[in-house]
Image (cartoon, rainbow, N blue to C red):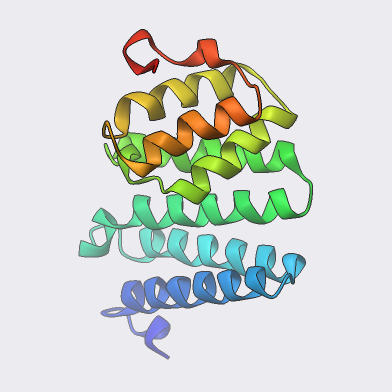
Length: 168
């Protein structure tokens, strides 16, 4: 009902998006991948409606991060479904949203390892580019940066992709 109220519709869609993403992650844990993907896509649609119903909403500041979180969840689900091309596309979308907000350093260790796996199975120039950008954005000495090194070395993918100052 909140979605129908013009004063609170943006909050309604935003909260529903959060709920659907939470449900998506629960289905992922339960290995119900198709349902997890459906719910992740529903979350993305609900977040997009925030911008449509209230383009000046205070929630607009958080929307790119929420959409990136949804993209990264979709990437992980696609990986579990052996859709590595779909996973890489979703990773790129999520990373792009985060980089536009200067939040690429917020990418977490499991996401980095999944991305390394996707790139090892379907290497391309985008993998090299994002590996380099992640290497520059992640703080030195962090577990995320260690995961980036570990993940890309483990899968023997384009160690040359790291910028000079990122090499070990």
